[in-house]
Image (cartoon, rainbow, N blue to C red; front, side, top):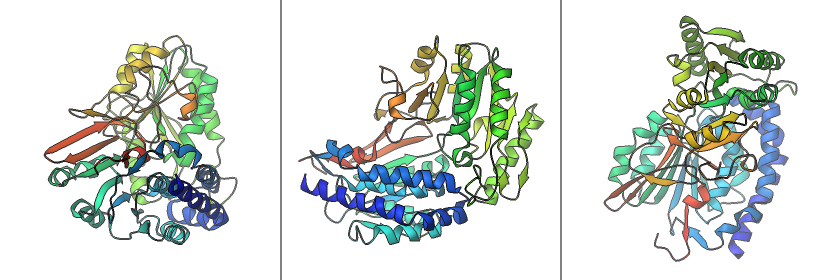
Length: 432
C-alpha cells in the first residue's frame, strides 16, 4: 500500500507539472500535429485532474503486483494523436509497479522532448523515452527478452504484420489499440435535435482525429431531413483556422497523407452518388468539416477509417437494417445509439462482452464501447445491463484492438474492453 501511495503522489506531481508547462505543450502540439488550443487545454485539465486522484481510483491494485519482474519493462508505442494522453497511459502502467519504455510518434518530436523533461526527473528509473524509428523499436521490443509486454497504437495492418514474431516469442503479451469506423445510429423515435448537437461535440473534437469519433451516421428515413439540417447548421457554425487562436475549433490535419486520404474518400463518395452537404474545401492542411449524405456501403469512407473532419450519412428503414449496416465492418471500437423503443434490441445485437475474453478468432459485428443517448463514451452514461459493453479504458473487437499472449506453447487471442493497469498486473503471489 505504501508503494502504491508513493507512486500516486509522484503522478499527482506530474499532473501539476503538465499544467505548469501548459503553454509549452499547447504550442508544441499545434506545431507538431495541428491540435487546437481549445482541445489541448481541455485535455491537460482532464489529465491533470485524473492524475491528482489516481490513488483513489487505483485501489483495486492493492492486492496486485506488476507483470514485470526485476529488469523487465513494458514497451509503449504511441501514435501522434495520443501525445497528450501519453501521461494517462504511463500512469496506468506505472501504478501496478511496472517500468515503462515509451516511444512517441515521430510526427510529434517537440511534444516527446517536453514530456521527457517532465517525466524523467520524477520517475528517473521507471520511465524511459525512446527515439528510435518505430519499426526498429518494435522489432527490438519483440525480440528483447526484458520486454514483458508491448502496447501498440497503430494501424491494424501494421499490428497484424507482427503476428509471426509474437508466435515465436515466449512469455510475452501484445496489446493492440487500433482504428475505428464508428457507427452513430438514430432510431425512429430519437431526439434528433439533441443527437445532432451531441454529434457535433463527438465528431469534430480533435478535428475528427479521435479513434472513437463517429464516422458512419445512420439515420431513420423518417427523421433524416430534419436531422441533417440541424447537423449541417451546427457544423457550419464551427470556426476553422489557426490552432493557436483561442476561437478555433477545427485545426489542420497533421500531414499530406491525411489530406490525400480524406480527398480520396470525398472524391470516391461523390462519384458513387454521395452529396456534399457541408465542407469539402481543402486549403493546405486545413479541411472544413465535411458531411457526405446519401452514403452507401461501397464507398471507401464507409469501409475505412477517415480519421479527420469527414463523416457519411446513410438512411435506413428499420432497426434490423441499422444493426446490419452498423455491424458490417472490420472494426468494432465504439457505437452510439439514440432512441427509446428499440434501443435495447440494438444494444444487445452490437455490444460485446463487459471485459476482455479469449476467442478462437477475430469477432466482427460487435463493439467494445457503447454510448446511449449521450455525446461521448463516459462510463456513467452507458448501459451497465447484461449484454452492454462498459467503456473500460480501451476497447475493441474485430481489427480495432486485441490482445495476443504467448504462454509456453499456447498462443492466445483475446478481444473486448480492457484496462492497462489490470492487463499489466497479476494477483499477489502469482507467477510472472
